[in-house]
Image (cartoon, rainbow, N blue to C red; front, side, top):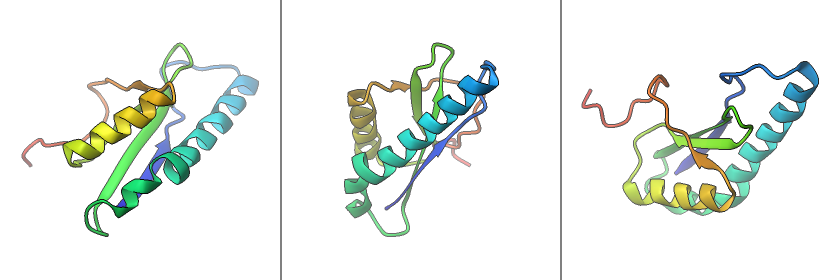
Length: 105
């Protein structure tokens, strides 16, 4: 399985420039660490052409939030939820994100 973790820098709020740079750097590091260390074991799950795509961003209280944005088996999504929860990240619940999960199309 190919694992992609994307930091999403566009948030609902606009921090000042200095804080935005620090936050963006932190989010980029968190995404790389999540992909390279914490979700590495998922590379052995499924077929080689399967994908896992996770978005990371901040909420308005500067907490890192996560969301799986593609169709994956429930056990894979549960593993991501467990790992992200252990890291202190919260589930990202939003209706307006372009997420194509099980919509029957």
